[in-house]
Image (cartoon, rainbow, N blue to C red; front, side):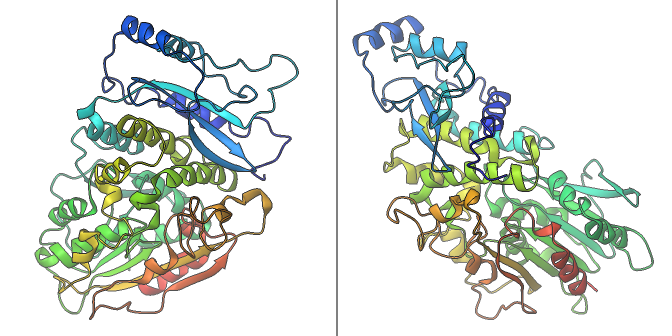
Length: 478
């Protein structure tokens, strides 16, 4: 269903529901404030305003739809009341803080016509709790992680031809013989990645061949790791410890940011592997930001939060994903809370650059000229020279219901100075050119990539649902 279908007034309800579902993940991390003092000072300054003020411990943000594009704004823009009320508790918080109460939605036949589809009020985070808040998002994205966000290696178990499950992690796995490793990307986890393979007959067939038969792998494992509070280098260090002295053929399927983790592991920490020249590591990197991604660039953070939220609606409709399977629906809102807590408002300020550096998982894959992590990865030499393969796509569609992708691409953006996230072709998350750019002088792809070209179907989160992707992986691992 197109994103701007006017006959579906509840089409954005998932954003509101998931914000409320995850409303308590920052519990205990908010700034303490005196309700009476805040109320009195607020009364003295009471006036209608269009943005949050830096000195107020209570903030309000709104999600606004304009011409089919979702964007985050400070406070509640002037105009008709929002279709989704902020709720009694949040209205009380605004009143205590001296903020003007928002208008209530109409109570007759339906919600009032308003660009505001969601408003939420919250206290700011404590100054020393931003890192903990990022970690809380990671734990919500990946419930398998503990409070220390330590990575895990989880074996795959075949129940029957149509059912697979991830076993509890092995503390010190012994990886001898042929091993197949899966590495997920940002906002994801092993369960979600496995779900992409089990969602199609082609993917199930691949898993069955990998786990049964004379040519199956002895070990099939998924690397479970934090993707925001931990940098790709630290993830790679942990992965290297799991694979210390591993022997036999090692094949890797990495998605998105997972490709950077795999490169750091093999090229930086791969000397601990006990592999023979006749069995080089083979890795298929799918939609990976090998040169970084513009989605993590500091100067684009506000626009990136808007794009993530639009992607959430897109994924809900195209992949029928909701809840934890579609983190884009709620992660943007939680990161908005972090941004507003640090900067005081959503407006672009010099503090935004510093904020991205407080999110190591994003900073480590940022497509900027001074990304020192990626620069050093691209210097070489490598501890291990793997056989790398790649899968890439450029997503474009003529469907007017999904027009948001144009809004965030510089070459077609209506306002190139303020809207664009990507400078050119991308799959909605990673710049297409970055997916094959290893950057190490002597290191090249072992074969031409599988390039979906310009596609109105293949985007960042559905590569493994494409039979061509599975066929490409199977051919390289034969």
